[in-house]
Length: 114
Length: 112
Image 1 (spheres, rainbow over the protein chains, first blue to last red):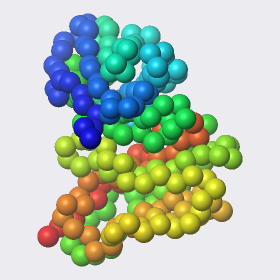
Image 2 (image 1 turned 120 degrees about the vertical axis):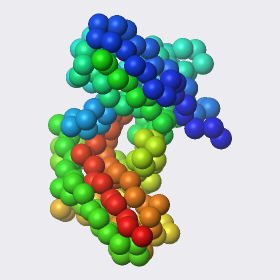
Image 3 (image 1 turned 30 degrees about the vertical axis):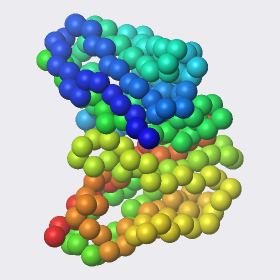
Image 4 (image 1 turned 90 degrees about the vertical axis):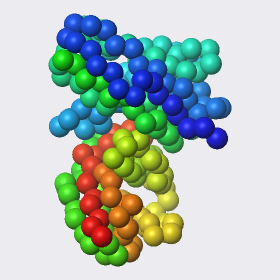
């Protein structure tokens, strides 16, 4: 069974640009979660999508947004990039709301903002 | 609010030594889940174990064992006879619902 996949592996942008990160969940999983792992700040919850809807978001500004597609894959968009957005962005998936707590993670996308 | 504390920032051991990682948590929820994840240098978080708040049975899986004590809000993790491949950052996490709250992580270095 294929795990969670994320693309790209690395992304380099300049301040003010937009970044788009992609995630494909494990087959059969309908929930996708996004986390940010920034140096010194640890792993922080960003967004949760299930069945195409945003279920909840963490304490991040509105320029962090995303969506989930009918095939349950997801995109994370970060607008107006700032230097402090440089981080590893991890995507996780789970079977759905009933099993929302067992999350399996992808390898991450390392975003560097110059 | 949830909080997970991993007081040990870094642990360095020689191969075959045992390693115990401490995790203390805070939550007002009566039902919750506790997790341990491993993050090797590649960056991917690898799920190790999930325990719900009603199950205080300790668990052993190969060289890994977990000690959950609700009375002290602790969920400690022991690696027995450590190996170089165990070198990674280990995260303890808490989830009363959909969102994982992670500790700061403990970096384990196993030297040959």
